[in-house]
Length: 224
Image 1 (spheres, rainbow, N blue to C red):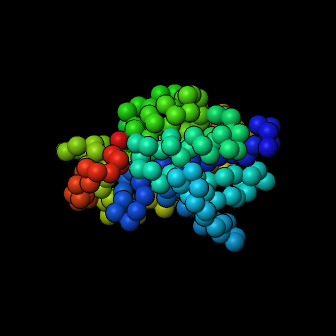
Image 2 (image 1 turned 45 degrees about the vertical axis):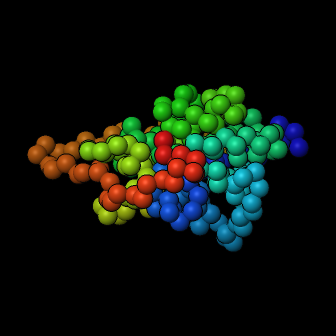
């Protein structure tokens, strides 16, 4: 396989195991799972490179979906070997991740850039040796009170869970647009502005729905 024939490598970031499955931090996993749900028949997942991968077609283009099973802050240990195996250039490595700097349900496609404090992106950049890979940023908001790490390791609130399927559908549409038409077209078509609240309307709390169990100190850090 040459770089010219390389597939798209679509990486959803998250943490492995049922303990973290519904967390805000796992929205990258949720997005690639949403894409799989739209496939007929659904693709099968295989284990390799410390992660799970599956092959799908998006607009006629081959895409390899990848979910690192390394915990968030070691994501590069999975993505690096997979990218080298498929000879994927950075421009064809699309990463989907949670974004605390966005309010819940805001979506934006980004061409590249820094890690912004996100440990999953930090490790990817370190292991890949480049930050010039496109991303889909999915807003999960910042907590009104408490630590960001607690917030991203808690599940979505009941109100957020109502809107979550729409956000995941938009993530799949953004992914498809990047693959079929390129990053610039996807940025123009899919990036959504911050929702403005009407004057006098009550603010929705983005505080955690519940306190998560404390991470096992023997495990890699699952938070960003």
